[in-house]
Image (tube, rainbow, N blue to C red; front, top):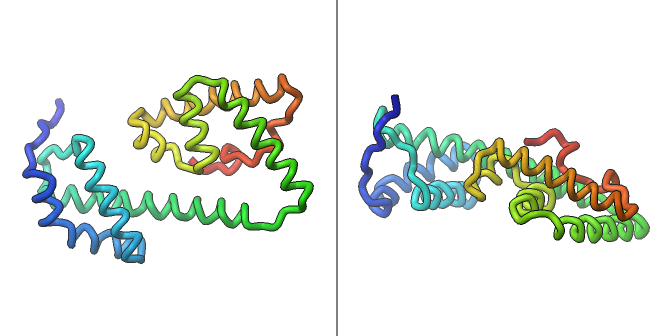
Length: 181
């Protein structure tokens, strides 16, 4: 049995009435006012573009609280991942390593151009932008399982193309080895 979706007041009214509370929730979790504002904007933007999934089983403010907490936690996870990636990339490389990395990236990008659009989008968002599976799913509006299977096929196809051309894809610093979803 599915819960009926409850009609909510216009989004601008909800935003004006609940922004301060949402901002306070996000600020407590992420610890920074600017970052908290980003989380609030992201949540209300998603509410504007997608049906919020609010079923009316609890007060709307209770549901918003849960959404803000989950979004803030996801934001922290993404920040941690971005910091780790930027720290890894900030270590000084020898000129030889820089040249090899640039060449491998060029080969990788060339092989990516030959896979289908959805595979290319998922692969780019994961490997070049460092987004998590849930972030990619939300951005492309596809199920997370589809993101994972598409990414797997995209990697196989891209790495296969690179291997056919005599390039070793294992030299690429990809997110698959990091264990991060």
